[in-house]
Image: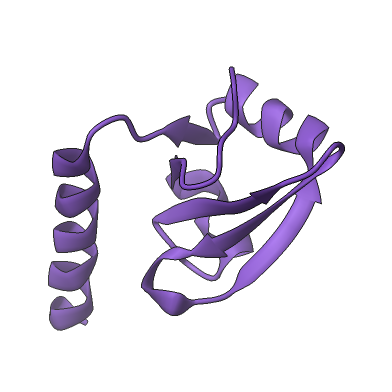
Length: 85
């Protein structure tokens, strides 16, 4: 899978705690061996080796978000959950 700047990935519920409870991450930089990303809802940013990103994708811990409707749906669900708590 080609990883480009702007690609968004949904974070599986099993690992959300590692990413400050964020639902998504967006790639902001792609280097030869690393990627940089921002987390949804401005919860932070980070970097990881490309090999680790591929490992997370292979294990279904991350899944590529293909359409904008799904992105909006994820953001809406998170917004609704914040109001329940």
